[in-house]
Length: 211
Image (cartoon, rainbow, N blue to C red; front, top):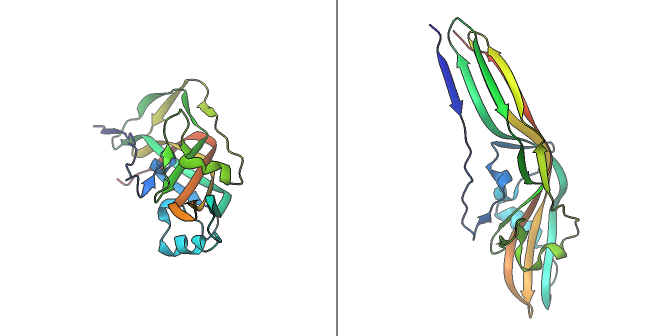
């Protein structure tokens, strides 16, 4: 007698205190992988990382931002989410139909930490208090349609086989720290991070399971 286990995983956004980390959608991805050594997301910064970067800011300003960059457009791979898992522990094949719909998301996402906040008033998130104008980067702010049309896929899951449907992709990470001054007084400080989405695709993987 065949046994079918069908799981639909829906990721919910992680909630962060505004004083510690204002998070972009990319931080809800199941996995984010760097390809080089000593590379990390803003959420993984420790006290040593902050102090090292703060030491690069230089002298106080009468007014405005001082910023230091930790990484600039470093490539990453990610596993966004697992959509379906089917486990066939029976003796007959299971046939399943999937329909993938068009999805739209911003090609640039941002996060911040400390007292650096995010401006959520518009359709596209931005750093508050004019931080972006102090960074030496050209930012992409348009919305990108990653899946252009509905796709119907018919799949057969053989006996004693596990099937997973997942979303993978590639992007780039830029991050660093900043301090804002008014009359030489430090009024805001913390970290900033930009995630730029480059590509996204579905992956369908079959693997044998133990009897």
